[in-house]
Image 1 (cartoon, rainbow, N blue to C red):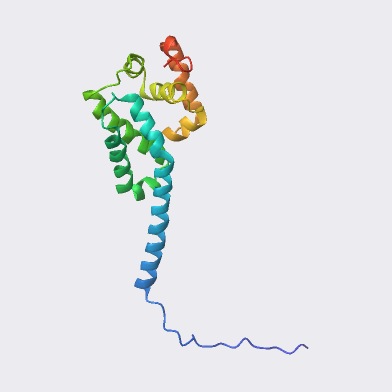
Image 2: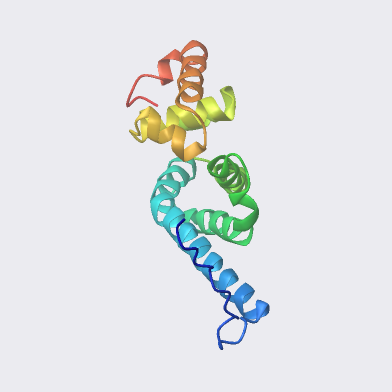
Length: 173
């Protein structure tokens, strides 16, 4: 019969137990840092694209930077909530649309084709045409930027082709 070696029970080491408030604070700081890095990456990726969109929608001389900045301030202030949302990019895109919309009532694009797009089409269709045809984004990138799936952008482009065919050829709108 093999010899049994009982596993010795040893009391906890002489290290004092970790104060749960310090542990919680360290976990909060790590989460906060990761969240901050996520927001920074989101901003670095999207701010230039948001700016191009706002410039295309608004008249020259309009403070495009303020619309983009207001959008990103909104996103930063609500980042924790946005992270729990199913379509974070769509929520932030809707805020950008809102900010641009506020400014466009005072100074819409001097480009008659862009004005026609936004007067004659649903927002998703107009944005799809603007991003894909005017700004040259591939459908997948436009979809990612707006927080949609590619088929939604394709559908938006199809709606635009039927409603405003003269404005939906690549480079024309």
